[in-house]
Image (cartoon, rainbow, N blue to C red; front, side):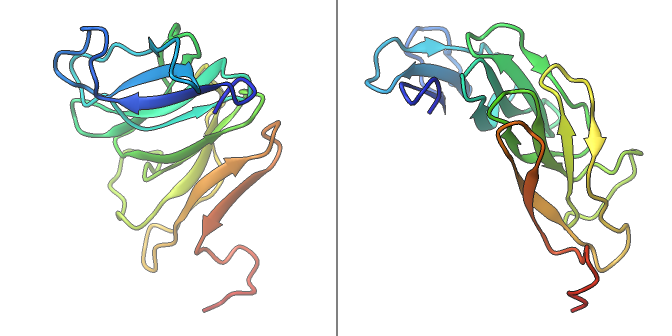
Length: 178
């Protein structure tokens, strides 16, 4: 729900306007009653929208992940009216779960990317943040590169992006040694 609970943003492979003949997963927006349906994305040659969307409180900024032709999930953002599409990551490993601050200034996400292009275990995952314009990429957690691999995921931001809650099996405090 966005814009005070009066609108929804969702993903569908439907073709209500005759612009999606290959049934690629696209972003749509409408009122909660189903009126004023708008297709926000126009993907034609990739897997389309895979995860998301997450919306700012006003609905002016959306984040989502797309499947590239390489099969790797990448994080993207778009304005709430469908303008200004931006691919935020170009990692060699996938981007998973993401969340956006209510004010739309920060996106937190999980990725298996380790920053240097080397392969990592499928069991590792770290939390990153980035601004919707693609600036300010920062890694917040660092899983070890050797067993036991520890993983963090499912990030959620508070209203302003000042605090991030996430799940982890890592021993950050030293109190959970097993």
